[in-house]
Amino acid sequence: MSQNPDLLSVRGLQVEFRSAHGAMKAVKGVSFDISKGETVALVGESGSGKSVTALSILQLLPYPMAHHPAGSIRFGDTELIRAEERTLRGVRGNRIAMIFQEPMTSLNPLHSIERQINETLFLHKGLSRAAARARTLELLRLVGLPDPEKRLTAYPHELSGGQRQRVMIAMALANEPDLLIADEPTTALDVTIQAQILQLLKDLQQRFGMALLLITHDLGVVRKMADRVCVMNQGEIVEQAKVADLFVRPQHPYTRKLLSAEPRGNPLTPPDNAAEVMAADRLKVHFPIKKGLMRRTVDHVRAVDGVSVTVRQGHTVGVVGESGSGKTTLGLALLRLHASEGAIRFDGTDIQGWQAKRLRPLRRQMQVVFQDPYGSLSPRLSVGQIIGEGLGIHDLGDRADRDAQVAKALEEVGLDPSSRHRYPHEFSGGQRQRIAIARALVLKPKFVVLDEPTSALDMSVQAQIVDLLRDIQARHNLAYLFISHDLRVVRALSSHVMVMKDGKVVEQGPTQRIFEEPREAYTRALLAAALNLEAMTSPEVRT
Image 1 (spheres, helix red, strand yellow):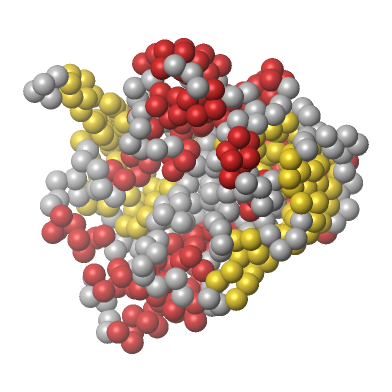
Image 2: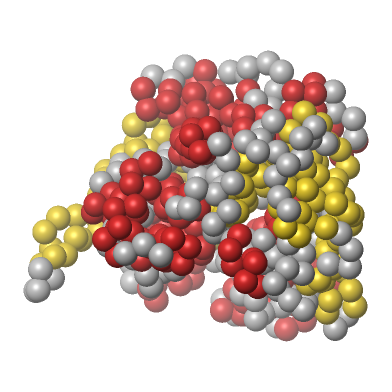
């Protein structure tokens, strides 16, 4: 516990969710304090109760489905549990602010950046429109958003992930809160952007003297940012300690498990003369920029600009780079899901000019697993329907045969075949990603694009998914294009690495050579950012 709990005091907090099937306790008697200017981290895997605890502080849980059977949350002299709405409105966004995990879904897609930041200033400060605009510009400069004057009229979809997160931080800081709650603020960001956002939060915390409650599953972030840490598991705090003590002398078995959880092992090393499965020569994907009343094309966004790549049987080619470098566009172009120029060969045949009808039989042999296991599975379909959909489209087997293939695919990814009758919302993030992998595998593909398949997952689940992908590749001799900004995962899975920037390949080669002897300054900068974060989770600096 903190020696001076004069800002926030949580005592015996319980959170229970009611449903038609009964009650479920998500938080079970949690207690902790936060002092002025202090950073406390709540750490644990998905489902441990971290975010539910954070949302309880601001009383943002859905009532009456969620309620507090017991407990107290005191902010200064104010009790927040069951406080009047008027009291809570005076606290939310004013004295306590929150940054959410995914800025794209947290920002209103219909409102400009200026309008969204202004809303907080109008509500709590009563500023005039001119004063609010001046304050908004000041905040955007403070968080390091480039060209803030031009960004005022921009909408969230026109900004990158890192820029959107900076806007979220600007909104949170608008009224100079006493406590900032940051819920997984860097999970979906590249390593270089992640380092920038963490440093920004640290600088702003010192500037405003505010306390920070950091919700995360990334222990590297905890070691860089926090003074104290509370480790949560299944709704309980199993260990509290100063950060330096926790990393050197973890007491609880669950804490030790978290500290050791990391993608490990080496990529498969198939022969160099393995058959070519997918290849592209000088591939280009250019998106037109249209302006004026007649919407004439004035320039192009060169998302992929002359990239050549070869993926062989049993090989994994890792594609790394910051957001906007063209990684995902490259993967979708290879699958013929984006219009492109340049040769694309699948199994030695140039498929670039093929029409949709001719491509359809090949679709089963080229599959993709997306980044977000929450958004990529239809909530209206059962798991069996999701996995079996491709079998129906390609008319593979009768109903009984398809059901058997779905069950086999679930078994292969380590899930109970009986779970095919359940729906995606009944599964954890890691389980949903296994379902997404099963959906791709059931069609017995030769080539799979893996687009950030582990970035939204806990460290321990990341390690499990990497092991699973490696095992499946060995069994089926699959060719992978693995897109990621997490270089630890890339190193564990890829035999060859391509580094992309602004649509071009700046460096490529065998994984070991890229990691140990990078030749380009951009590659060295990416590795420096990643290794700096890695070093925080290990007593020794790894190369």
